[in-house]
Image 1 (tube, one colour):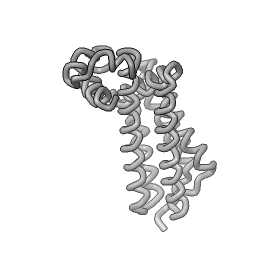
Image 2 (cartoon, one colour):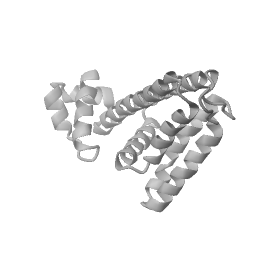
Image 3 (cartoon, helix red, strand yellow):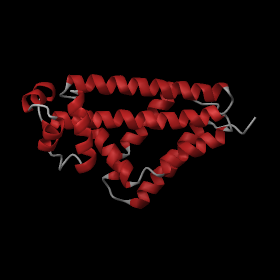
Image 4 (tube, helix red, strand yellow):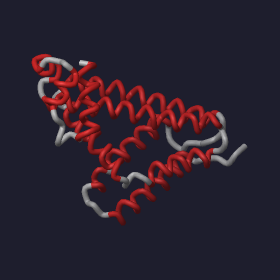
Length: 196
């Protein structure tokens, strides 16, 4: 499974999900076709697991960046500026593609129990890490959140994922307006504090 996912991720990054070439994966990995179908059920099953792997990696990277800013302890405004920057680039092509991958992976998990388990574990672990990061920020006086931290973290993630509704409109003015509304919502809920 790990070998197929490794080469599948490479193919997915190279070709995307639509042009994903299963023959390349099988040839490069040296894994038999029967093994692929045994573990993943289909080409689509492999793609979904590869997308879940990419999702897990991107969540980990984002969470580690946020943690490093919090641990630097400069100010709540600096932390907020980082989150606002992430939010303002939400209309970028890369993030639209990332949201699309997440939506496809979540949809596939409805039918695939092992994928659902992988996503749930990754999501809960990533969310717990982010809650812990914000708890550090609260304890050190960087933020004074107005809502429970777990609710804040899940709301932030829901807003990112739900933004797919804006993506499909193709309206850049709407995209920018939603970004700014999201930034203001985060500012209110996080309540960043000036440097002590």
